[in-house]
Amino acid sequence: MQDKNKFLDILEKSIETLKSEKLLDELTNKIHDELGTDIKKAKEIVDDISITIDIIDQSYKDLKEAKESGKSRQEWLKGRLQDALKQYTEERKEEYIKEIITSLDNVNKEIGIEIFDKNIDFSKPPKSYSFDELNAQAIIDNLQNQLKNNTMLEAVIAEDGNSKVDIKHKEIKAVKEYFETKLDSDYDRNFKKAISVAINIAKNKDLLPEELKDKTPDEIAIIVDKGVTSAKVAYKLAQAELNPIDAVEYIIDRNTAILNSAIVRVTTKYGGLVGGKIGGYIGSIFGPAGTVTGTAIGTTVGKLAGYEVGEFISKGVKKLASGAKSIANKAWDRVKSTGSKVASLFRF
Image 1: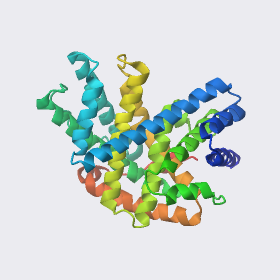
Image 2: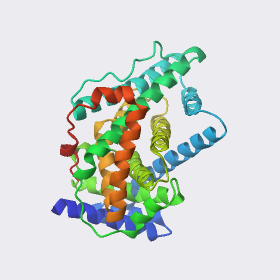
Image 3: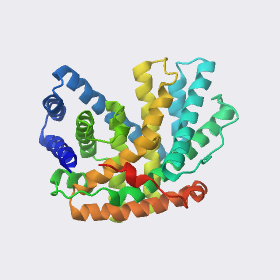
């Protein structure tokens, strides 16, 4: 209980920085004060988090604009991958695509084994990893199926774990505002940055599960983005601002944008030397540890918005899981009768 109170205190203090017009400076000082990190290093951490959140936000907005202009999610992702592949030789392009597809397939299987005690084959790999016109569509279809299944698993984990996070805390107005503002508001970005900094501080103080120990600041930022976004979607769903299918489609869009953001971040960090890097990054975010801790963070943050908001999120999480199961019904048929280990992993 003492660790939980310390964690909640760190969350609350980070959220208070949202009042500042110089948010990033305040968050930098927060890391400096809490961890004794020198200002330069603290600023690097905050910049890493901030840039990552901004890339996700811009990727999603680009996808949204593309869909509004008549393009499909698959067409958008194909274009983004083509851009990412320009710097590679044909041989390296195939290695790169294979690593992305294999890593997504592996994380879904890992979730099946670790959470649902089942070895599940979610999809068949493409016959070739060449990204030419004849095979590119098969690759994109595979990635979309993998992201749909990962979204379904994430929703089921959230449904099972929602009641496991027992938080009794006063209502924080700034958190309630996050849930009540529209999806993708300007407030969302700053809120996610503040929460990500809090999680980074708590991680370094050994207040969080082991699963977060090896996560970098940018990986934490993506995990937080996924978790608090899903909680907000659940709230909007319970408020009848979204229907279940639209809610799930929204999260699949976000996860597609996050996959693109992961590719951008790794390419920016390592340039052409990305062998093994992109697969590890995707595994860190979409795998069991990232998925479970992300949903736990979203649930925990939701409970800081007050009893009423927390109740709406709980109702929405159930509806979201139902919608996700209907979209990925073949995968769900293979896991629905299993015993979940979520309770033991929700240790906030």
